[in-house]
Length: 180
Image 1 (cartoon, rainbow, N blue to C red):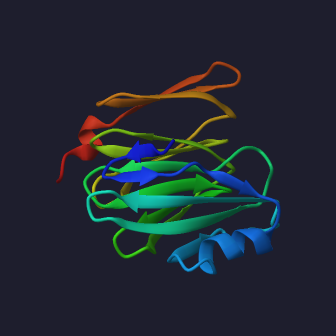
Image 2: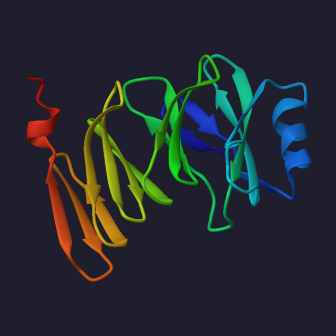
Image 3: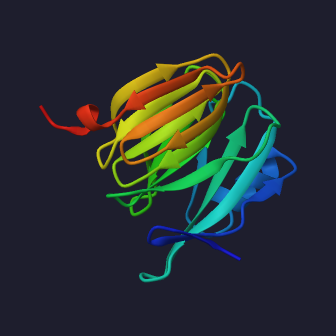
């Protein structure tokens, strides 16, 4: 069953046994495709999915290469533009769905954990903090650090990170979202 992600349906994320199987699925199947993560330090896990726009009848395949075996890539619709953010390895890659191209790659300071998103910001939570990007242009507005992130909660006005040793870090988003 596909996941609805903004205007797009993201098919089930499939795991592949090796690079050759992923490459065949993503770029050699006759369906337009894109591979991301080829800059991974070590090719350890391989995932692929189809992204469809049911209103236009268009479809493309995306292959994702992970440099670890600690989970799957995380896909999130970016509010305010026709993009999907993919969190994996130590980065967030933003793909423009219409052009099927990577439009931005955001390096994180440690291993990616998950994405949080609302109408105003996209937050890439990683092992040692979070990078906060203003929507729709994905301009970085904050880079927050903490000792081993155990939990992250996003509201309209604040990001709250809790570390493994229960230290709480609050980032007030309101002044950062106001244009000077």
